[in-house]
Length: 140
Image (cartoon, rainbow, N blue to C red; front, side, top):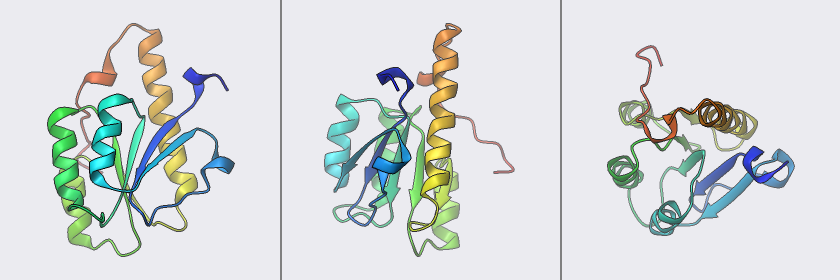
């Protein structure tokens, strides 16, 4: 795959450890929310995967900061014990998916690849969807 064809994912948290070499794409891991903010300022990612909870700050604080400065950034929540309340909060903040940490990595990669393909198609067509806020369907 060329660089423009690879899906790029930022995984945030110490408990999230996908076998990314077997899944394809480029996966970067930030062990803290602060490190993730630094990386997001420097690099572009198709999907940000946030482990819940984070070691250095509440996940919701990180998500709100990212949404204020990069409203177009797509993100997913991953964790073993995500409550219904946490999932509702995540959905209200524009999550593209809530996943089980252990078993859902192929689905996470599938979502990231779909986001990447959509962005590549938009670029080829001359549209700029990558910088527009994502609109979530109410049925999601």
